[in-house]
Length: 70
Image 1 (cartoon, rainbow, N blue to C red):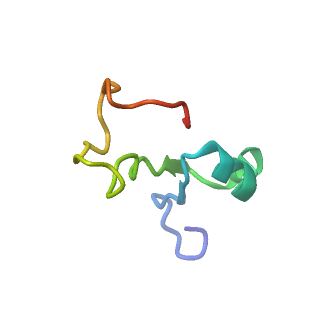
Image 2: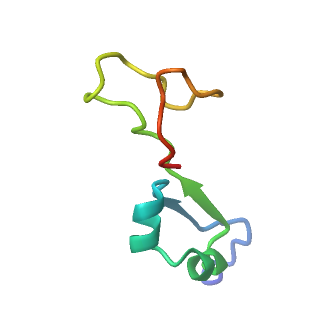
Image 3: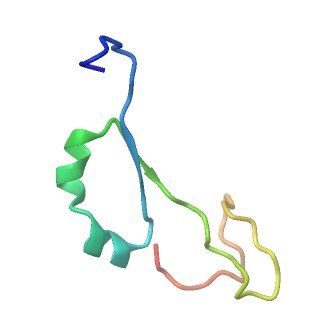
C-alpha cells in the first residue's frame, strides 16, 4: 500500500486453530502487530477418520463431538 499509494489494502494471515500448533509456530502477540486480520483456519474438525461426514463449522457442538482441543 505504501509503495503504490493505495490506502485501502489490508494484510492478513491464515493461522492454525490447534493450541499445540499455535504454541510451536506463532508468537501471536508479536505477529498481531503486523496484520490487519488473523483468520483462524476452522476446518478439518471432521474428516476421513470418522464413520460419518460432519459439518465443518457447526453453530453448536454435536453430541458426537468430544474433547477440548480448542
